[in-house]
Length: 388
Image (cartoon, rainbow, N blue to C red):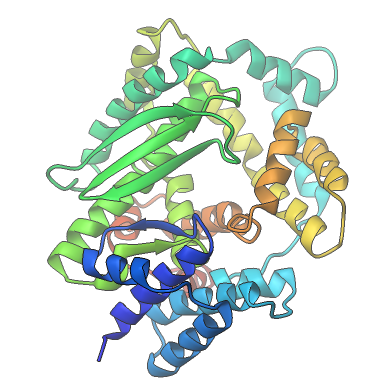
């Protein structure tokens, strides 16, 4: 009889055949992938029943959390009636909650002090970003260089497996800004959407989020420690509608703050100068920190669309007003929220950031634990509530 971990992997692969992009990465046994590829497509209701059976055989723990996320997604595909908030909570272990727009207004005030000038804050912020935009044909080369600087800094934080590596390339017409495609074998391909404007500071954040010490680092370290050394088959598949995704986004959001110091800022600015870029990264970080509360705006827009019955126009206006995005970026955000794999995923950025940031609390050793251990969302919630 198949093990629980093998049943989980098969369930994830079968669901992935029904919805492209649901399997974020897979580096497990090829025979399991071939088995699923040669099967007839599964019925979503049958996969929901398969998940129920697996849940009944599992004790409380990390694997059960992931299966619950898949069970929820399969049920949605099968047409089960579920509110948006229930869907999000059952997938990710955290219930979406709105915050008062006063929180956003306060963030706007802090941002206004960092971006002075004439016109509205949205106009000034947009002009500031335009003045720093990297030409699209230079985005990937700059990203490659800052990634190498961050890689060396990450080596001081966690032991990177021998042979880990990644490549970087530009893409167009995607619903996201950047994406890490983990290929297995300790390797990734990071893609950056050159349709969206990016400053040098943005590219530093993208490199930290997608590569070092973010997504690529987590996946490579866990492949080495948990799959190769500990034999944890369940870690070989990364699935979008699961709590592991929320923690992964939290790692990627918190990572830049963990590794950044004056020495690293100096080395990054030196790398940027080789491309003719002279952005003040300390100011860029200050602006990003002032904007951090605005990460929740995307989730508010998702609630507006999927729970309140708001229109795409309502959501675009909300994003423009509170996230200070351009009309084009707001439209891009709404497109993201209508993607089947992204609508519930919107919570992972803000909630992942808040939970991981509070749990790590500036402790690099705790952050390293997130990179190499299968920690549960409820562990983060318990640790934050207890202050430990």
